Length: 113
Length: 116
Image 1 (spheres, rainbow over the protein chains, first blue to last red):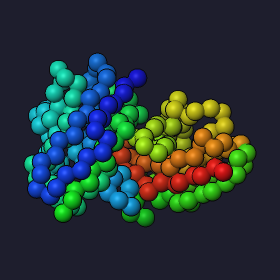
Image 2 (image 1 turned 30 degrees about the vertical axis):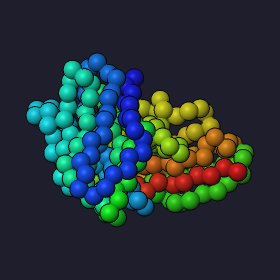
Image 3 (image 1 turned 90 degrees about the horizontal axis):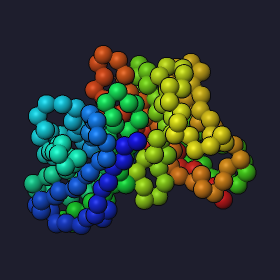
Image 4 (image 1 turned 180 degrees about the vertical axis):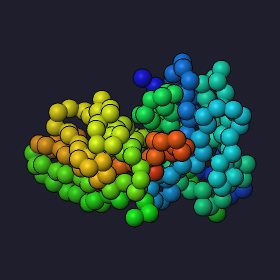
């Protein structure tokens, strides 16, 4: 079964700072990779996803993620965060052809104005 | 409705009681998922429906948990003889799972269950 590791559960940073959240997964086969975000008081929603092709994926709100197959990683980045990026971010993976998503524990990100 | 709807949003019950949680997916989505999120954890897979049938129920923790989707739309998660450890947010999600599928799950806001 696949598992997902996210480190630095709590991240506090100032507006305009750069953000990078690490995500590592354990599964040797072909995978689909996702980042979901949960803003305060809202439901989980998709930020970006990788299925195949260019390993650098761009999502909504200026976020991007890079799939590095050799490192089993799918790190999320944003060059300059805003106060509105305060949220919890979850990395998720499913094995190709499998319907169950495995989520990491999440990163609680607080952006100080 | 426009999104996945879950009811109730909050449920407080006593240990040993029976609980039902309802999910109304996005119209036209054939796939429906239940996840459970405990405090400080990411969502944990429980069960997946494709149409009316449970295609994968391997995430249900024990036989006190059961879910149905009799008409291929609304689903109900049923928990018998609740225990304090069942306290969590129960999330429902739906997706297309057809040729137009983008792989994205659309989540509801969840049902927060507290077992006293």
